[in-house]
Image (cartoon, rainbow, N blue to C red; front, side, top):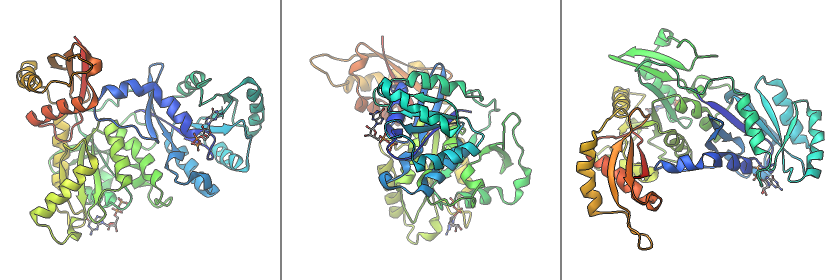
Length: 437
Ligand code: GDP
Ligand code: GDP
């Protein structure tokens, strides 16, 4: 199970600058895979052999110049609940404010490791200002300058030293781990109830997971699967769920710990930015995807053309990744709810697709010959050979060529789409790697 690090603090202390600085360490790797997008709030960081997820809780707050204390406090509480390590960012140029003190009060009550990040320490004189931060009683402030990068290596060393969890995968059997995610009111709890009924007590917790186990095993409908608990579902009612970062931050763990995600969208609402954020988390983690258009009972006109319009609208919103199953369901009437599970299972199986090297070359090389990568400054890219890497999380294809640096994103997408044309990889992420022969 991966570690999650959350950045908290009042507006303008430099949280998003720090987020960008730290996630840059991973940039090169992210770029190597196709179809990944960066966003402001969630990213992966690699440091000293550790990989962890980083969230900037402030990134979800609109109009952050004018934020209420109460809102920040909620933000911090959710970070405490979900994160493994918390970075509390302070501004040495401005010193401590009442808002900082209020955040500190909440953090002091938590048992999670907190690191005091004394930001904007651009020069030595400013370092001295951080002495004030000892007074809040949360340990030594770490001086950094998010803007010029000074001190961030030391900060990363300290972050990874706080991890107690191994960042390796859970040793689970060959059983799909399915997460049901989506924004509030999409119908996640209703779907889970429809699927597992009142038999919640049959749940078996997986040994080895700490705290409240996040996996629940089901053996129903001739299917064996783990449902990954979205804390947001279980802890419903404890806090208001109206804020976007609640559902997103709470989805992170479920997504990271799943094989396939069922993204529930509300048929009466369509796809909005919050759905897009969750979708982007799924993609970034290279997880399987089934989109479930729920509350279909409320849609009166169900003619085929309406269905097609729906499908197209969804794929347009989620482009360029469009190769995934869409199922129209009603958790209320239980329409097609089993189909959802079956489809998730199929996506899980597809992730294990192995395409023989000779088939790959036989089919793709002629296509590439017909439509080669565009030449660049008189240089021609020649792709000579394709192979699939063994034992990867998602199907990963290596294209060997003479000038890998000239193969740009649109052509990678072209290659990915040709693979998808010929082999059924619906719902599965794939990686395209271009390497020098
Ligand atoms: P957030 O609201 O906490 O996410 O803060 P931002 O990252 O948006 O930064 C607020 C302002 O502080 C921006 O103008 C940044 O350029 C500036 N800033 C961030 N980090 C540093 C730093 O290390 N040194 C200096 N001098 N300015 C910084
Ligand atoms: P969650 O926040 O995603 O867990 O959503 P809930 O399962 O709590 O559902 C939110 C509201 O939508 C509740 O009032 C449900 O009764 C209703 N709802 C959920 N699924 C359906 C459905 O398929 N059809 C209709 N008509 N209502 C639904």
